[in-house]
Image 1 (tube, rainbow, N blue to C red):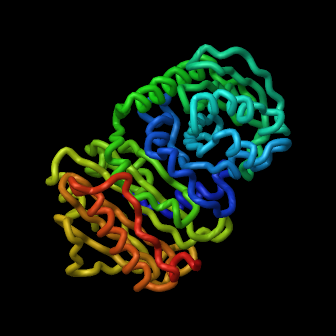
Image 2: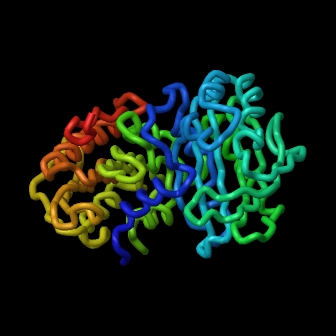
Image 3: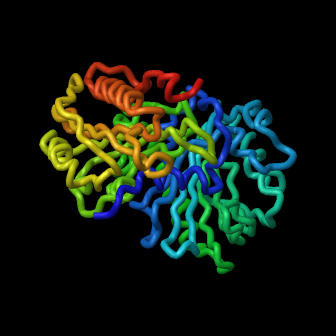
Length: 395
């Protein structure tokens, strides 16, 4: 059993280039983030040897960060709503696959927006690229090859094959890349582009791709209004176990899992962090088993103590832990985790790095109650999270 990795993995999302940006307002409500999250590629369709790195939404400001000759107003004025991106990388750090989708106000807007997003001379002015005609998806479409300098700390030279296309009012793309100077595999690039096009089309038809439950995403708390998204989307069983630092747990048998995590701080000081995840199992018994074994399944939290007798209306089984976060206050209980089952669903709520233990606990219990309410049959969707307290947000 490995040590809990959730906090470290979320912090990594804030410091790995593509998702680094100041706090921004939430994306347009017209863009369905759950649908976008279901479209990008996951480990079930990627080649062997790629590990999940990060996934989240990107605003217009984040998309044009570092660009020249184009700004956020140009994108939003053209009908851009939001972008969603996911990143997987090989264990040796030499290969990477990025898939991304962006929502636009109409098919016409997406068609015109393609020229804005895919003009690498403006969006990535430091790189060297060549465009060729694409064959995947609807027009406009293209295959871009070339090199650019990675935004991460290592500033590696990245060689890319980036296939981009339109599907109705969504622009999509997948980049197969190397960070060691070698040439990316063109057959893998073609295969990944086809897989992405199929997933986008599946979601647009109202169906869920394999391992994804769109209805579950709609019933999961949307936390993004209060902070910077750092981890949002569906997870495979392997990815969920990695997030929580588990190995060989009963989580491998779940049907679908959706997580939302936000930072209420900055890139340099990301705490407090708030996360909520919902995982669906075949039966309520399976979900309750995970809760009952929470002490064994989830590695020991620093300075933790279990809260006795916590009840959440609508939940079948509940456990809660107060604990210390390992980054800023390793000797002070300023964080809170709730693990509960509601029917065949498992809910995990984390509040990390609050000003004090009471704020962490009160916030966690409020979110847990709201999440269970969203899982009821009569609940409205999408699931809106209650506003976080000023003591936690600082505003």
